[in-house]
Length: 201
Image (cartoon, rainbow, N blue to C red; front, side, top):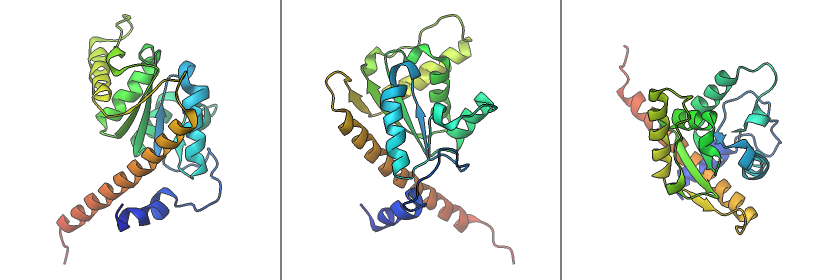
């Protein structure tokens, strides 16, 4: 790992030192956890959220990040728009959820760095089902986003035989590395923009 990235671990990812961060701290989310609640809220999604929080990484998880009075779509859209990395937990009931697919599509449209976890399902078994509730354009959007996720290198996990602590540890490490990479790319882009900015005399 380069010296620049090592420095960014402290200056960007762990910028709040060792103090504990409350889930309600109002700053942009670093990570958005997209998941199907009935499959993984009490398992992978919750465990990953806790693991990231211990590292002072601000993660969006619906039950932890939303409070009574929040506008559902506004809060979700802001969380995705402002995040640097998305973790998508693809599970057997994932494609039955409009919200899961909508969040995934939004992440893909905004070209977010996405880390797929194929939880108890193979990529080839993921399909958008036409239940008549979505418009044709929404169906096409969801199919496209799901295909993008299927074509992204991710983590495959069997909840019956897999090592849960190892999965959480591995995913956390990947998220940290991804955050550092995104921070570095953003710094590079800002540097290019500053170089190209007109000089006012």
